Image (cartoon, rainbow, N blue to C red; front, side, top):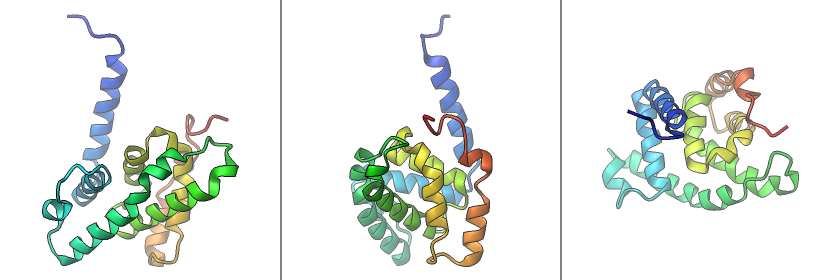
Length: 166
């Protein structure tokens, strides 16, 4: 049996991503699935699909409002030297990130990166460490939570090869 050209790397990457996702806590997995459903309108009624109580329903409604900015953010991703486009893009990215980190389901950089690469695409990778650190250091999070989040991003994750064209 011959393998189709180019499927080996794609298949290996898919398996790697599945393993990474499986390593996240169940609540984190649920939040990522919910976030992607809301962002891409994959559910006719996200409240029916995801809300278990009134508090979660309010969170879903707020998330839907925040995620209305995904398309403009995705289309405004600057190249890694595009500082002239930084303000509109980065402000929205940090706002979305702050909301998601404030939901207490993305407990470290790894699940945050996993979600945001899927929300916004691979082009956002160079911007994720700084957006994560900016959102994780905002005062709406408890100081212990800020510390945990900020300590979850390693130097190697923040400076990973391929995350910049430089």
